Length: 223
Length: 146
Image (cartoon, rainbow over all chains, first blue to last red; front, side):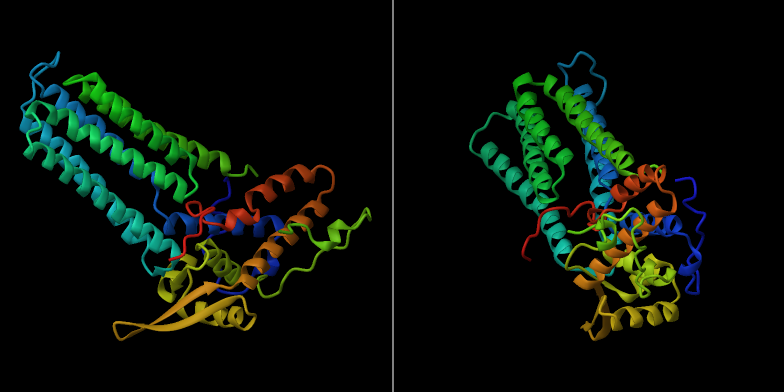
């Protein structure tokens, strides 16, 4: 890594002959890494944005619950925090995908787009189901358990799928963890469920980001 | 998948040094080939985006792409997107193979340049730039028919 920039900008002339094998291998590695950074979304950044949204958003809901040990936030403020941070996270994913996918077409883009739409479809489906349950007499007191818990389970299933799709053990592990978080949050009951979602859910995203960053560091050869 | 050149497989103590592919053994073309190899299998990239990723001028890139195309390493597809012509570029199987063999030849050269003590370093290199390193990080195993 010490001479990452030593090669400087691309040479305008065919200068390959002047470089030693080690320098050429270094050029291959740095160019490959630079291109991969520009072409593919950064999962760690996405996971961090969701980790922050869950930790602060559901944390705010906990502090907005009248029966919580510390209750000092109005409900609208908690909703504003969660919605705003989630919107920031979604916008981050969409801009990253659009920016890095610029000028590229092919099977991997199709897979990525379908996976992205899967999130929208899955959440639309489960939220429609939740609304339907409320319309058919589900007590309003269960809504704070049902909505975030079902969201965590759906996110878990989608991360399991992502782990399979992209052969990524960390994403798969996160998926399994989020299933446990969703189920566990409902078991904990209101308002402790918000603490579970904030700490175990948000913490799960952040831990996954750390795993991915550590893996990327390990994969880099030490010259 | 052969990462060893035939030369290094010989029992001889001093194997013949592998020849470096002259098509790739020019820095700009090496850059272009590596950049294209970073794309997932079957993906294509537009000329301006490749230009941006490889950090080359349009004229320079066009010149080197022609040489890579003549060698059968790069596939050029002309298409229209809402009446604007678009040039799609991708690496052929031969191009991907040529890059892998080129990297393997470099590692052989490196190992022969510093025998004994150099073997550890070359092993690390071979891990860092093994063929799987040219497969994008997020598309490692699956191949979904689009």
